Amino acid sequence: MTLLEGLLPTALLAGLTLAAAAGVDLYLTLGLLALAPVLGFGEWLPETFRAAVAAPLPLVLAVGFYVLEFAAERSRPVRVYWHLPQTVVRPIAAGLLTALLLDGVAVPGGALVWSVLAAGIALLAHDLKTGAGMLGWLYGVEAPSGLLLSLAEDVVAIGLVTLALDAPALSLGVTLAALVLAWVLTPSLLTASRLGRSLAWSRSWGSLVPFQWTDEGALAPAVREILAAVDRPFGKSLRVAGCARLESGRRRSLRAAWLVSGADTPLLLVRRGRRSPVLEALPLTPAARLESEALFVRLRLRSRPFLALVFPRAGPSRDALEVEVERWGVAAGNPSLDRV
Image (cartoon, rainbow, N blue to C red; front, side, top):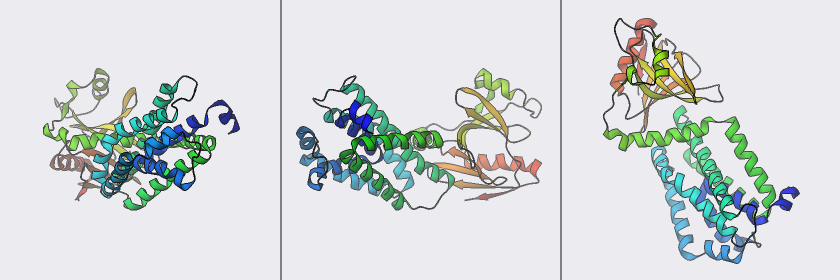
């Protein structure tokens, strides 16, 4: 890490790590920075920075919002809604912290460039954190408890702040390596974070618009071409409804998809980024389980270790999904459907 120390100022190395800490837990990070001189850390911090973060009003607000966040995270639905504005607040706060830390410091490219980069790091850290919680909810994981997850986030934030103030170069190396590994090895975390925001929107403002199946004629030409080869009752048009496909055993376990209704067999159109979607045949499962959550409805298909479809609450109703599954029963020997 000596190379980093020689190339970049200490304030910049620490600022980028503090941006990641802010993405994980902004209000704890602000509180720790205010208390750093008392605890014997960060003696090198500029006096203007210390005065700004330790001012009475910012410190009181940080403590108050930390308590609010701790309470909000005791409920999964409230946690998702709480973190909607945080997607904007935390990158802005991280950028401002970095700009304040670099005030009067000569850095390559200028302080503005590095402040924007810090905002991006905070956004990535925040999305990875919220994506982990959302993915656990989608899978129906009951443990670890929300309290344990909050404590784990606090430990991570404390570790990052301590490293940033005591060993800035080492802290930046550890932070960047951790973020890149999490991004590469578990890309579904970012997908889950985006899905959580979409589900929250669908449950609130999106629910004001009545749900309607999308006719295949209204889809993009490339998608219509894929569906044209699907067997269906004579003269019947296919319809689709947006959902997410969730399964175990894959690095990209979460993908956006459409459930295809009206075909002779259960089908799913799965999106693959910018490439054309892929048509998948859903298993003719002998049993399915329909589960209602606060922000979504989960349809578990039990023919694999774990395969589920997640629908927004503003999507197909439970009755519509029950009818769809019962149609599949014609080919599967009348499967049972559990309703939760």
